[in-house]
Length: 151
Image 1 (cartoon, rainbow, N blue to C red):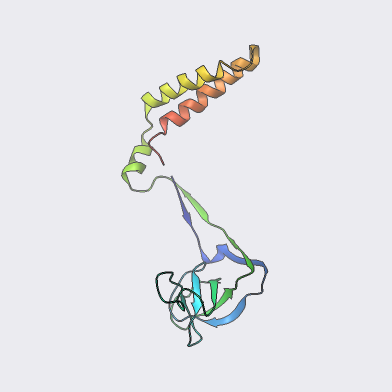
Image 2: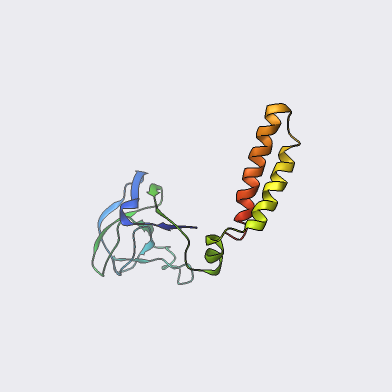
């Protein structure tokens, strides 16, 4: 499994509608958060299950920086802006029953997958082409079969 981590450095305005700069945060939120402009002129976290104002009817945007506290100065991307949102990858399994199953490959299903993949590959081509198809099918089947418990 892989964990994705979005940081402020990974949320960058690219083009389109120019962002608003030197805006005031009304609460703490992270870069990339959907935010709305409150009646007091401060940006707050948008909520789809709140009022129409909280859902952005009075103005909505995306935070281009993390606001650590009330009063933090931020930039806001508005509708029409193109924002790149990157993420850092952290390889490895998280702590969950599925992740625990991923740490130990399923050997029996790996063997079954290799046999099934090899059988499918044997139906393709002739000579060297068939040999390559068998090898590719067996390898793919083994990997997929051994990881069947992983999501």
